[in-house]
Length: 365
Image 1: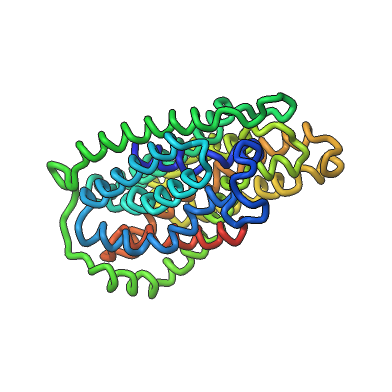
Image 2: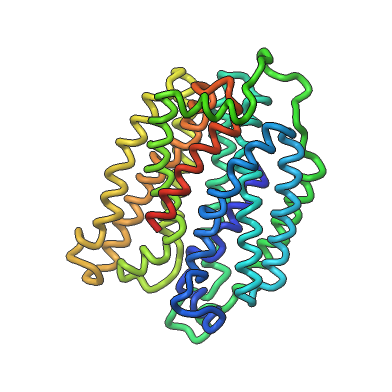
């Protein structure tokens, strides 16, 4: 969980303050370059498409401990380099790509850990807590980062503070990575439930893709996770398009706070009633009013720039509703995928769902 928190913080270090970052790194990249501020967040989605299946294969073949240790070394190393050279956009970019390569080692191990360490009736909650750690990391990036950066364009030092912010995160990430490397374990002392033979990785993928429930679930994640990834990556641009001057990250923060509350409630109810599909349907319908409110916030207040404060209030409420439902669907969906695709490896089922969401997230960005 700790590794998930820090790798998600590193994902969005620049996203909530993208306009301020563009000022800070002005002149270090071409204005029309693909490798710009927005690419820093999008790199996680792009690299995941390449790294996801090889990493899932590694988790399934060599075990959780080895995979998480590799992830910890990469995450800690690139995070501290990113902090030490936080004023150099080229080194920040290279470090971000390294972190993007490391991300699947933490993310794809999640359901594999819950399957080994928890009985069936607790796995929805366990997956919810693991997913919650990702959300917590994103909340920190969304809410804390603007406090460490001069995000008001009206002040002379607009954009100052990036190197110190990245260094603070780098030290925290490196410390966490060292602890994970030292104390991670593959198996609990008393494994829950009965052991049974699992498919090998490639056979497991074929088994997963042949199941109708998994095909539907992959499509659901293609839509839902793609929306979440796109909003998280472009949250400052969304605020700017509403006429909001300051890069405060609160739209993303509201979405994440709603998601954290939802991730506590919905997986627990799913475990209690032993229902997965019903709660996924509730989440998909529940997110629609929030998404509509976020998309049409400016239109509901007379148009872009007419009443930005009122549009902002609508966007915050809508983001909270969207986050509550769309983010609580994640842990329920991951656990449902592990259950319906068994005996395929959990890392394979989770990897496919995340893969679908990264593809759509890239298109939406």
